[in-house]
Image: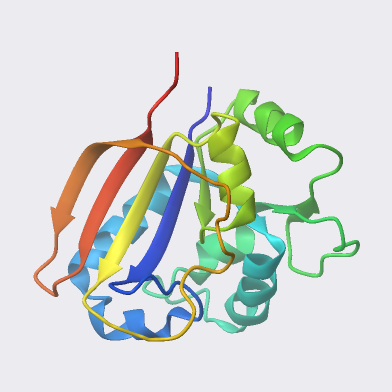
Length: 184
């Protein structure tokens, strides 16, 4: 069964939106880990907000420059969880139909590499509740951004996790990887 890996850039005060604040920290160590993440994946899962942001940015990036990651993002199979997106324009994008949990369960059952998901909001919380997220990687940046934290308020959502890995980069970024605890 394929793994679903969530990878989220976050500030010390919990901001994940518009992560331009990551740029000064995207050094060789970060590029290496980000590259390993995409090498281990052959599909990407997004909610509508992430799709809107990514589809506006990635197609304008230079795919011939391997340091941009654009070749992966523009060509990988993309799945969007949305009830309002009907005609995605970004290459290789499919809108998931029907029940999200059923659709992602079917994706995970297919042959293939990991499914990578960026951002953390209502789609992620629903999939964690359903036991479908295998790992959450928080890239904690030494930045206070101010303003609203997280993309969506996670009301009525509680989960516990086991630490599976920690990487401390020279830049001060800490990548903390967790696996959701399963309830018996």
